[in-house]
Length: 154
Image (tube, helix red, strand yellow):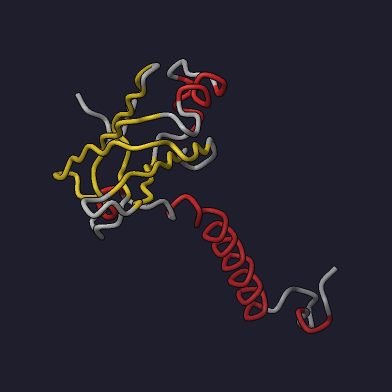
């Protein structure tokens, strides 16, 4: 049943009100789609954050490995030329990508456990921060390479 203000004298919806309601419903649907699709567009571009022409290799000791979305993270400490400790980090592949490549969570935590000596290769942050997009890690017990994306070395 239509509300009284929508009705004309012959019992049909008022065209102006009908248009307003249609417009309001369409606007609500569009707003909902944009709201739900926002996270899809929120992902950053690696080329914006990292200089894909500056490949660096840094040796140090692993302090933490975080196996979480959207990217796993590797943290390690090294010393600069003055002997000061520098905390480095590497943005790695997503856990699902690592698992599809055949790595288990257990294998990764064993390979990248805190206290392990590591040599990490990656593309340096454009800001100069001690951060890389991960390409490769070598430890005494094995090697892990980036499987896809901009950190991948062919």
